[in-house]
Image 1 (cartoon, rainbow, N blue to C red):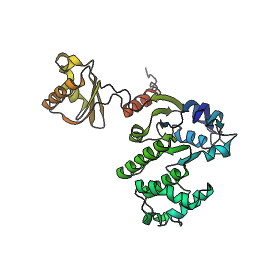
Image 2: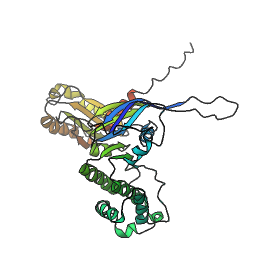
Image 3: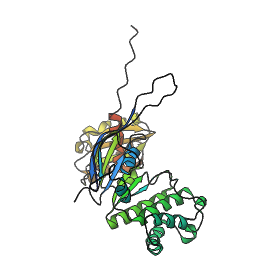
Image 4: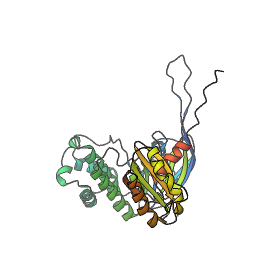
Length: 341
């Protein structure tokens, strides 16, 4: 069985624009640089990366909305360029900027119109819509209202309803929960998990909300500066060896609090205590041999030192940590100021 998605050395460049007629154009922008990966049938594969890293460009190429500059991309064994019409029939796409719905039509009228493009009979459409709409909280009264009266959350839910009822082999999601309230975001995550897992649908997920990735993805890769790098499973190994305690305060106070741990009973179980400060929250981290023994003693020590503990995290792998580490590691070194001496 061929891979659901196969990408080989895919590159995309956008020509530089010309600000003024008398000036040469600016250099071309490299959106994707020899990207390669495969997605197995039924897998939920996530792409993360900073804004402008190339995630949406990749989705548009795989959806036949953009042509690649070089390399190849295949959907279920078919080339996305030479088999464009066949590829489009295999994919449902949900973007974070939807403009295809007709504002003066109701939700039901929009769904019937788009379903007719796929030759889906009205009776079949209603049977497919019912369970999805119920899980997303789209009542019949809402579906009978004009689309122009919908909130952002309702519009996004109608997008997912349209994508799910098509029952295509592949589903592409571009930041599915952006600008949504926590309740709507959780409803959409649940619907993605239930609908896609239930029918074995392959999902390619591009997200800035790392909670979406942790909840949904089987594997994750990061795109930065047009290059793709595999990370693996978003939750990492199951062995509990890492302790992270988040406290409110300054890094200097936290470092003073853990300075004496290297010679005490807590430090004897830890290789090294790391202290990192970000936006008023200090993270204290260590790899330990016995998490259950370390955590109570560590918390008691921090409280005695007057630090306000806000969160304890025992996950062996934190996607946000890995994301920040890789992005910061790839930043170019600042140039040294010229010497005046």
